[in-house]
Length: 161
Image 1 (spheres, one colour):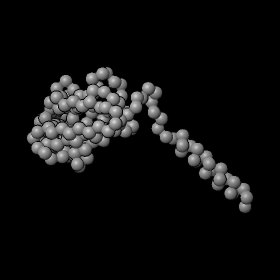
Image 2 (cartoon, rainbow, N blue to C red):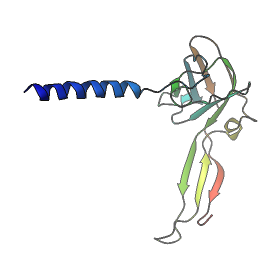
Image 3 (spheres, one colour):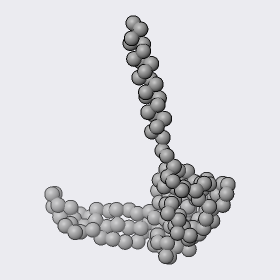
Image 4 (cartoon, rainbow, N blue to C red):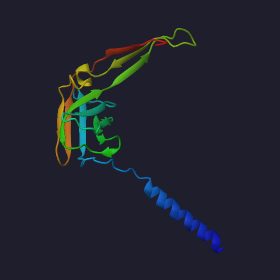
């Protein structure tokens, strides 16, 4: 009776130790991060499923991204998992795409697929985005109104290419 109890206790201790080692370690050199939320609206209405990226003006190696929820809010994370962003000045790049398959060639072969941007393409590249954000110590919030909804063809994918 005593031996099974010892095995159970040993197993529990091992699981506790290993689960503690499974936590995400901060990468070496990752600076302090500060909470950031960006809100995106079109014609005053929140826009869901917009990919948000902060592009550092200071050549930071730490990618900062997020995706808007149904309220148009994106909570930003650095390096894909750490909440917040480093202090600095950034360009804001937004993207929301729709992929629409066209009529198939036949039942076995897909036809052309078209990819549309649902956001004005000026916001989709760091070279053309007029949106900027400065991250300071403490909580950071920004709102961006990006005008009327659009549907701009940005790519055509053909079978076999």
